[in-house]
Length: 200
Ligand SMILES: C[S@@+](CC[C@H](N)C(=O)[O-])C[C@H]1O[C@@H](n2cnc3c(N)ncnc32)[C@H](O)[C@@H]1O
Image (cartoon, rainbow, N blue to C red; front, top):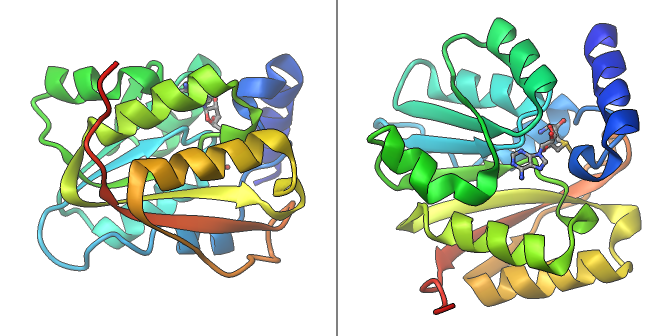
C-alpha cells in the first residue's frame, strides 16, 4: 500500500494534470464507484484510468471471474504496476479518448458499465468533451457510467463545466453521498441513459 502511494505520488509530480490526485482512492470510494456492476451475468466492465488499481481490485471482486474487465491506462509505469498486480485484467496502455476503437480492436461489445478514475476537473474543455464523446460511443443504451469528483473542487470552474457536460451527456445524473474516508473526500456521479452522441 505504501509502495503504491509512493509510486502514485511520483507520477503526480511527473505529470500532475493527467494523474490528477496525490494519492490513490480509498476502498470506500472504490466500493461506491463500482455499485452499478450487475451481480449476475457476464457484464462488460470498462475502467478508465485505473492508476495503481483501487477500483480494479473492487471490480475484480464484484465480477468474481464473470464477464470482461477492460482497463485503459495512459501512464505506462502505472500500467506496468497494474499488470503485475492484476494479470487477469485486459489492460490497454492507451488514451481513453480512443475508447470505441480500443473496444472494437478487442472484439469487445459496448460496455454495460464504465467506471472512470479520470481526473475530469484537471482536463481542458476540449479534453472533457472528447473523453465524454468516447464514453458515450462505447456504452450500451441501458448501461451505467460512474465517476468521482472531489468535494473541495466542486465550486471550481472545470468541475462546474464537467458537471454541466455530464448532465448534457446523460438523461440521469445522480450524485452520491460524500465519501469522507477518502483523501481528499469525494463523491460519485451515477449516470444512466446516455444521450445520442452529438454530431461533430
Ligand atoms: C486521479 S488518478 C485515479 C487513479 C485510480 N483510479 C484511483 O482512483 O486511485 C487518474 C488516472 O487516470 C489516468 N489517465 C489520465 N488521463 C488518461 C487518459 N486520457 N486515458 C487513460 N488514462 C488516463 C492517469 O494516468 C491516472 O492513473
